[in-house]
Length: 232
Image (cartoon, rainbow, N blue to C red):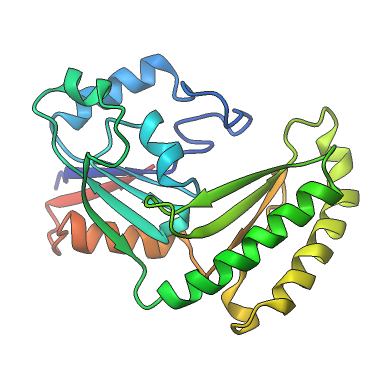
């Protein structure tokens, strides 16, 4: 039996955009792929699930119906534009938001660990200023710093440097983690075996949680063997 695809969910880094693309690149989805996604988006919802924040993703993926940001900590549903050109040209980051969801019961932790993450980011920038770039991931309203990425992909020989740099970075992260007034488990560290960065989040999060939220509350996915969601 053939399954009809009723929605597409996709990662961003490494799927729609090359992992090596720097944050400063506003056109990080290849043009030909972007045009295909615009065509698909006219027929079924295209949703992005990413570790990036709303302000990064929205400007680069305007074809998306929903953006699950910062590993699912915040999910944004966007208003439908009357036409494709209007949506492409809409640069007002907040006026196009229809609904906004945070993970349940995390606002108090976000408020506390936002301060911890801010101090951690400043410390790392000071101590490792020639070797890393710290990317701050804020909620769409700017109220919370929900995560940071400690990034060194700009280094020419980052693969050789990884084994020397990351243990030192982890040591600094652990010091700040122990200073948080909420339980240690609430500040979540994500490391990668083969990527030149590590992430620190205000709460535990993962893309499985993000997928479930988008599927259940936004796409209203029902158990139906004839209809499916495609995840890239």
